[in-house]
Image 1: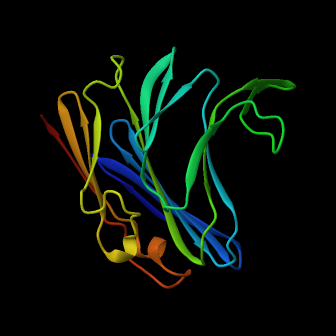
Image 2 (image 1 turned 135 degrees about the horizontal axis):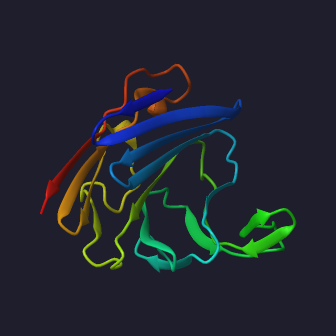
Length: 212
């Protein structure tokens, strides 16, 4: 529905109706050269139970860190996986190699072969019909680990679920050795609409990278 590409970021947005009473919107902001923001909006009328899954490859270690996870592996860069905003009723856990109560946390590199692989799961049951938002940031780090990397969320929205219907963009800053990137994220009017056809207007996101 929306695709924007420039020297600072790429932005993709779309959505679908699963049934008459449910709609899922997703927006992905690629902050060049290597960071991502993934925004999901759930419009729920019948109070379904939801599970948002982020699949990782075998061998990735997941350590809880603040409002997210630090991901490490022997053969790749470390990565910050941070939840910028989620409903207060949501919870997260890591599943790996679960064979009962719903098979989850496996990787199949070839037919008939399985090996455990971690899955970060965010679970949520809406307390009432409405619109709910999950915003995650994925920040790869250098070979020296987490030293010098920080994600700072605007204090005006820190600690409270972000709702774009309030009119304020989601603002945060990514600090890494030698650089600071200020991000202002606001999806399109249709992403924020109560139902398809309610809103028009392009997304309004901005990225500014500067030296420290």
